[in-house]
Length: 210
Image (cartoon, rainbow, N blue to C red; front, top):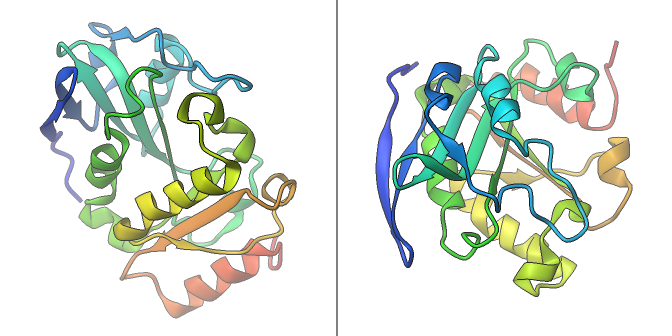
């Protein structure tokens, strides 16, 4: 498993953006948050402050990737972390499930920052022994700004994640099942055993839970 932070420069219509992964809580101190983070027409995202991102960065087994304008302003982030306490996904044994999620600031959402951030987090040898998953809740999608329909936005996510090895999986998890357009995708690492894959498939429908 690589623990050395990596960085990458992305050219955008608004100038260069620096991508950095494995950002620590200490490194967050010198950074500032773009006001477009957390701005949605009908939804308030979970991580809307520098303090909340700093808290995530301090958690064990977390990889936080940031998109930085002028090397200090956070215009996007992507997080890889274990599932949260109380979620169904914590029950898989061995505990190989890791959630992937992120956001780009409004005003930067047309500048293709999310894919390279996702690539940085997924491209890690440690993920060969993990199952990565992404949950797409339709009520969090920025339809107002993108002018996309629910189906178009959903298709965009699928096309974004497919090349990274993610596939759609049906599940009866209550929050995901609330709306038919919601999305659950996962990437099974090549070192995951058949027994663990079977346990994961069972967990998708609540079987084998404690």
